[in-house]
Image (tube, rainbow, N blue to C red; front, side, top):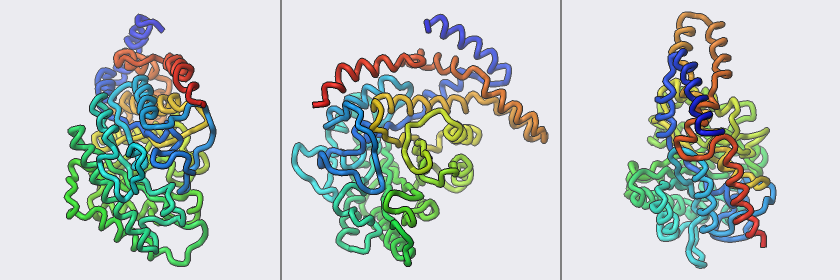
Length: 424
């Protein structure tokens, strides 16, 4: 599309939206202000940098073998930068602990320091991309038995407690480096494959482990390191019992003033999270959203513009709660071009947010308050036909990123020029 065509379509779309009491300019300004954290693990199939060639464990599976996987930190950061250049708005980068770099030395996870993330922090400052962080409690010999912070083996449990403490210090260093908060998200794979007799004791151990990790005596500033805890329904090897369930983490977060993380793929296959937002944010200050797409199980498929993701952002916008969320992507697909996967998911997430910002809320609320149920549903259906695409294309143009599917050509050129040369 030409610039003139994009502008003309946008002007016509604005006329339609304004007729419903919506200001597209305000919607675009709000969209541009929402940071989105891109997950580094999409670029290398969750392999990490500490032990090249190690197998992925902890109930996580990356399927496929598309050419061009990032083999080191420099390649991974270059790929993230390429993807970022095709995505509008404010971008952040989400890093797992086993992406530390020690120039060939082996640093145990319980001995990690900010020094192993110097390159990430230098890259962050150079490109103006703030960092978020995650301890890594999987793909490690001390996680082989399926338990980490809830382990009955005190040697193993203390190891992972030290890892959690170390990671909070790293997140604080990242925050100081970038001059703004770093979200530090805790997820563990702990659970059992089949029915446990004792569900109580592992949870008691997990409470004790987190109490030690989040002890204020460690001197971590909660304004710099934003501690979040992430639940999961099940994983491969923990199908029957997950120690860190949704109920466990929600209660722990509420009691200790932490931020709960809701991952869109971490619930029952027919369970969605949009209804949970108004309930949780009634009692919590903020939530971390991991935008993902589960199919039949927590399969971490690439985010698409489907009803689930649209409903999540509709709830947040209707509740005027955008400022009360941290937003991050979380999926990995090794069967497609990995740069394309980043761009697809990020743009779909932002499109869902834009659709919510363009919703004629005043008219919808009026129908609901008057008891006009048919009118409300009719208007919601009409919203599906309003020219969201015209406003989105204009936004991309003004943000200096490709319009429509023009970004595909840039991805294909990068694949030819860069990714295909990594096959050897």
